[in-house]
Amino acid sequence: MRQVIESMHDRRHIMHVLYSLGAGGMENGVVNIANGLDAEEFRTTIICIKTKGGFANRLAADVGIEALEKDDSFDWK
Image (cartoon, rainbow, N blue to C red; front, side, top):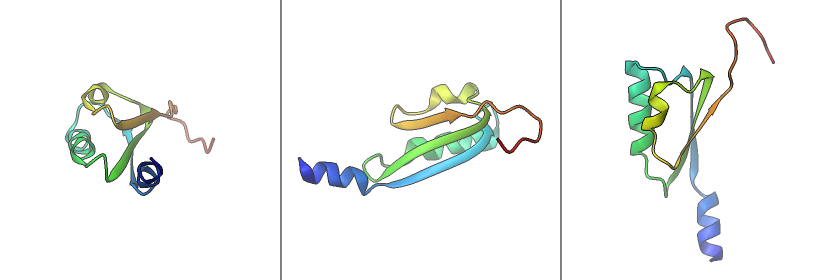
């Protein structure tokens, strides 16, 4: 069991940061890449600055997603 826990921490964490996962070419590509990565080798998270968007429902269950819900104003917070 210890070996399994250690191997979980050895996975590389890939984080994609984009405005949202609304319909678009780049967003489609990010979803395809995130879903295509080997979950045993990589941990994948998508950070959306605005909202999750329509393509979020296409993500595999092992892909994390967070929406920061930022407004359009310039704000460092």
